[in-house]
Image 1 (cartoon, rainbow, N blue to C red):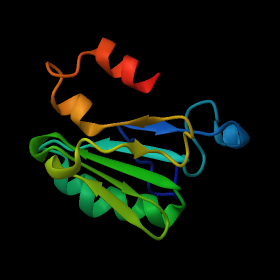
Image 2: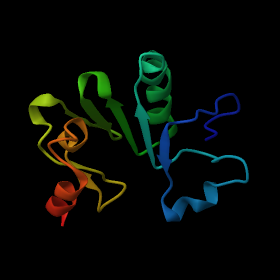
Image 3: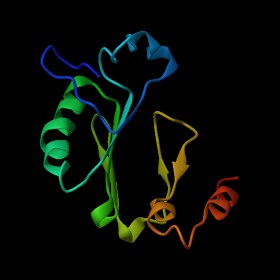
Length: 125
């Protein structure tokens, strides 16, 4: 994803909405993705939070997810607000504004034995 002449970050995951497919070039995305997901690790945490996150927001990424497995947190950043899910509210839905039909509970990820895929699918449907 090329956000400036000198900066081409590579998020862990990104989503481009169909109306922005014109940003997809042969070897990169020209301009911001609509949704970026970064999964923090001890080796990338500082880079992801202090360099990438502010640049993503400044460049116009509409929705940025930060997933922190070590402390079981999800944080979603939109243009003017953010929302955080931690252990205390992990049983409440995360809903994307970019992917309208995507909703899930963080607890489904953190407690896989308690929430096998079949149980999660049952709850979604």
